[in-house]
Length: 443
Image (tube, rainbow, N blue to C red; front, side, top):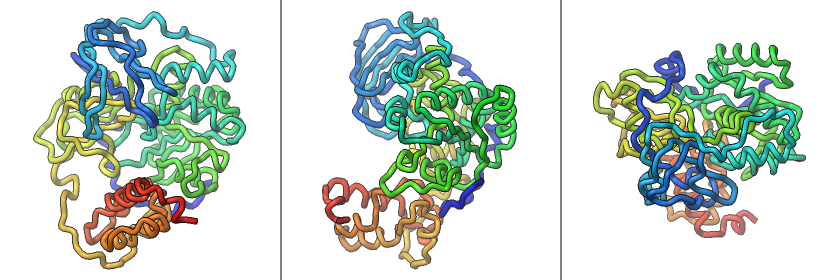
């Protein structure tokens, strides 16, 4: 049974260009990969290799408190230095010159029968493989499972993928359904959960059919749930409400309502880590947009410059007006094509001018309330904007629960006055966080 979801918007999918073509490997391996030591939530990892050192695929190159980062190609480390990442800031990175041999690291775990592994052994394999949430959160999967043990009774694989253009999870479900469902089984065992659900948008019926057929053939204890094609249903709190009817409290997480949510790509990475002993070194990335000659989904080494991905998709038919890492609603604008693919990169979208609204002149708020009606977190962006223009009182901004904003962009999308409300919400949230008075102001 599906449950009502407040807010959100219906968007033109624009997914047909890439969703029909099978996954493909890069035509040529990148000559160089740039692997940031910070591409997850939490403290950055510390490099454990140095310039001049040879490395193999799957060899750890950086370690942190709750995750590990591995080499995605074999070759030689040429530098450990700051390089630009998709967020637009320099991050300490391990630069590896690819030797083209794809030599595997001999210290990698062996293949294993996951049904014979204990929960502790499963968690150790997931942590050693560096698996993090690949839907955008970037939280350590092993740590998330530990927090869920004894607290959650439902595990949800989120494959809604409501962002326009992006079809990476869709193709993964079509071609690797058995791996994703096996990953679901492993996650359920590690979390001590008996109820498993795969949530897929209703416009991906071919993926629903493949999942149901595979699940029935293997006799898996899970169900496939179709959810509405409505953005931002791919967000954790929204998919929990749609599937279970439970509402995650403000500033809470899914575990607070006895649920735990993982992305489809994360489930597949867990399968590879536990059953095959493979570290998280590659991922699926959608390369699409009106400027791309042959939109498609690619299986690429982490650290590959997005320029290489565009070349593998046939290059550009004309100069793009906007290049995004991620989708058009929540993606990050890029000024360089040399930024690398990270564990969180699900798409590269090269848009022409007719594909996006572009910069429009901001006018006075007309108090229409559209931003309030579409906000999935029940916030009031127009009042936040008004308060910022009045000086931005910290107590008032905290009272408006700006910390709950998920940055989905629905408010900016529907605003007839072209007010950049999602940016104003981020500004207000930053003011409250930096003041340290947010908690005091809400008492």
